[in-house]
Amino acid sequence: MNRIAMVAGIALAGAFVAQANAQLTTNKDLTVMTAVTIAQTAVETCKSQGYSVSVHVLGRAGEVLVAMRGDDTGPQTFENSFKKAWTSRAQRAPSLNFANAVKQNPTVGAIHLSNMVPAQGGLPIMVGMDAIGAVGVSGAPGGDKDEACAKSGLDKVAADLK
Amino acid sequence: MSKFAVAIAGLALGAALTGPAQAQLLSHKDLSVGIATQIAVGAIEACKAQGYNVSAHVLGREGQVVVAVRNPAAGFATFENSMKKAYTARATRAPSGRFAEQVKGNPNAAQFFLANYVAAQGALPIMVGNDVIGAIGISGAPGGDKDEACAKAALDKVAAELK
Image (cartoon, rainbow over all chains, first blue to last red; front, side):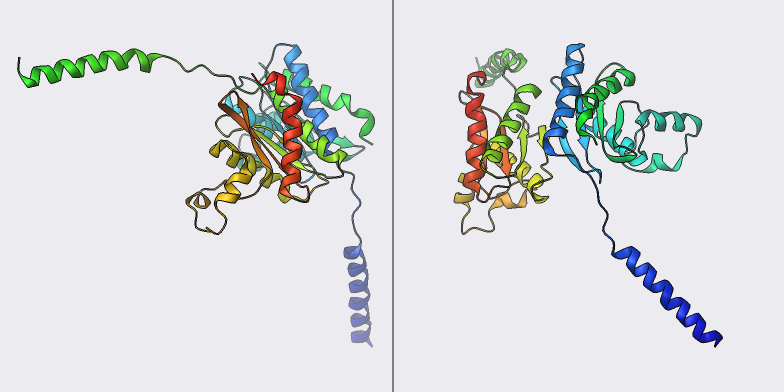
């Protein structure tokens, strides 16, 4: 009897697991034009302040949705804007948070991943509590200024992010 | 006046002449991020108007990405393909469709051993006069001719700026 009960229990658990795995996830994701608007607005906001910046907008899986290389920017800004966005998407938080974390603990594990960078200028793109992507900006004289331009891009499409 | 002395004098003269030429800087026009964005978005919208979702790449003079746009409504391979088409157009200074024609029946064309060539229509060089300053590549429409038409529509729209 004991053994039968155990087998029955395993079968029941199996049924539950199967059902849970079989469900699909439902996700909202960025459209191409929303992503372009975010990037373009960030470039233009910084430009109006006299800063040439590069911008990356990444999607849910960290894939590049939009990449823009700013006029006369250093080649590193293109890479850096990608990595700031990647860091924001990975941690679902402003890349500033990671910069602060690394200050506290310079050997934090995530620093060894290829695309993490402890630098301000990246913001996650949120729909409620869901991080559906991220925007990263690089080229302004200071990560706070990069982040402000990233923010302007997100503000521009705030009405669509729901 | 030996032959040797003449040769030395000749070399010195040659060096004097090439000196200033090498010291001159190149002067050329390049894409701004603003106009590159206009081209990419123009092509995506031209295709969208015909019911096609496409991804786009605009590359600069050195084949560097100036603007890249992935269309999540298009197949994921379109992102890579639009880059490679544009790279091919920039490298050959000609529509990528021309390269596709040239290598038909020659699967061992030397260019295939380079990472970014693709034998597919859908990209055009961006010209300022006779100078190739970049390229636009499109992928996602049902046929390279349709991709290329969207690229062309985008370039036509900014033709006044490309000088």
